[in-house]
Image (cartoon, rainbow, N blue to C red; front, side, top):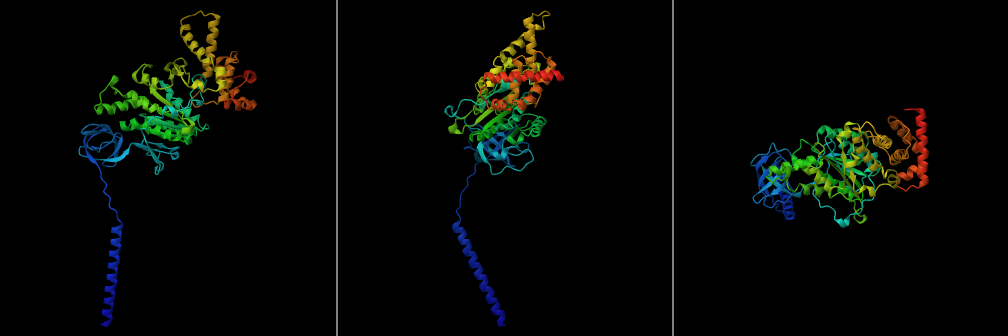
Length: 519
């Protein structure tokens, strides 16, 4: 009996001690806890259309602020009316309906940036589309950012080599330039941009390919091409797919530009391709009309020029004090029936620093790349061009344009004088030399070798269909026999008369050997 009483007393004492310790711990936690009131502003969906939603409430929402809908879907504030907010959706809105709750996130529309994006395929919000790991812990920057000030910019001074003779020799592009690529459908616009990206493999240039409203099969083909040529290691692909909401297509180029700018401010040279801004303009028109913004010419909103200018003005070459990097833009647009005087084409021509016009007639004739030299221009790149190009291709652009005009009139005449025949014969050889197969990119010394052979008359004695084989012979042996000269050309050094004489002797000897071997 005494043992039982003692055990009960011990148990009671232990229980009291446990209660006392628990109470002290609870008192300590309560004293250390600092309660914080977190105010959340929410509203409700009033109306939903394809790609947009009208929201009631959110009186303090800001322009371009990211909004979260029920079901973890997102959109951003676009129209800030007095009583309601017009929201552009970034996810499919099938599950949204009147009465759905929407909350402010307190941050503007942004995208991840950083070297971890290299080799990845993402959407404008940074969500992976390539099946790889999620991108977490990256710094995020706003998609909409002001363009660098005029005093922060430096002159465009370094060429961006595309690997294509007709562009590098006749219509050059500089790092920090905005060069428009335009033409009808199926004329090779995307191919030029992809080849330019591939040619940057060993140049240190980081590339961003932004697809806007393109078919998924076409985008998959571009990605496969970049991977097969080992170009994804220095590239980032941002996709606003054709089946994505119009809002995703609208913000895609701004997000891609922010990604490129992050590298530019670190001192890197960046190339960004917008494929294409015609689809971007249509997506902006779509959301603007649904949100009842006043339409203008061709139903585009009146600020469509500003929409594209504030995007392309972000491409520049920075002064060394501000990083010294550059952002080169290759915006692509689609013309209809070769009409370059349309609303969107004329807007973008006036914004950019030059244009590459691709002719469907040349494309159907098999002249690739189908660049119409007479209608293309580079207002900046000529100042950055290597001296060797200016020496061998200075008058080539004008002579080729004159040949194309003469060729049109020669079709209506059966009798031509000797000078006209000689001009036409020379022009055909120029056209043959400027032809280049897709993904068949050439280094600077190889291009200079071909142009020296052309301007010195080395190809004049060859039939036109033998010129391609002669070019291959020149390219194959140039590096082997003239390595020092090739290094100087690649470095952009100015060549003297003796150097060009050596080149002429080399190409004439190579062509003579090729003629003896045969095609």
